[in-house]
Length: 234
Image (cartoon, rainbow, N blue to C red):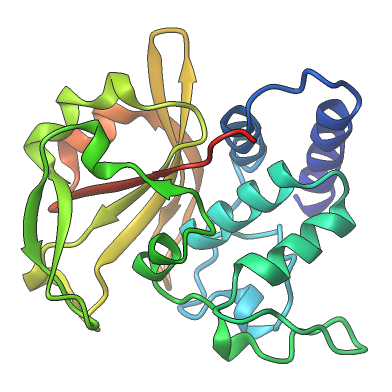
């Protein structure tokens, strides 16, 4: 699986960098996320990549790692550059590699999706631009947060673009450690069809990265609503 992923990622990177018309950054993010479809879910509660203190661990992915890698690979021209981008984007400060290739300060990483949004390193938040929002109880220093509520999502899906990052917000009563975001996925638009690419699974369980119709996913989800970020082309 690791060799397969590496070949697909390297091939995609070469395709994107071999032409000046590689497409919008959102399309590149969606393409890179798509390359992980079928990759097993990382069941480690901490995240194997965090536990092993590495940047690249493509054998298994969780929703945060999938998002990290899709963005890093889309913004880079080589696997090496993707690592440098990761050191800039995954941390409150900046990741530091030791001589053995391990990250020395993984405790400074983003552990929560809401911190990724606030950092603006993963696109500009466009939640309020998409449609009607409501305010719900916040946590972790946030008094309240604005979301597109679950019943309203179907009304804004046609405004979504490839590469949009969707952060699924937990209901306040469902939060275990004060976490606001419970899941993350990447949008892929194909003609009139809108898909969600996400690492589907549970910690200490099984799963895989899948691509599903977005409407089907939101129909059965148990989240309060969503927040959305988008990268804009230079």
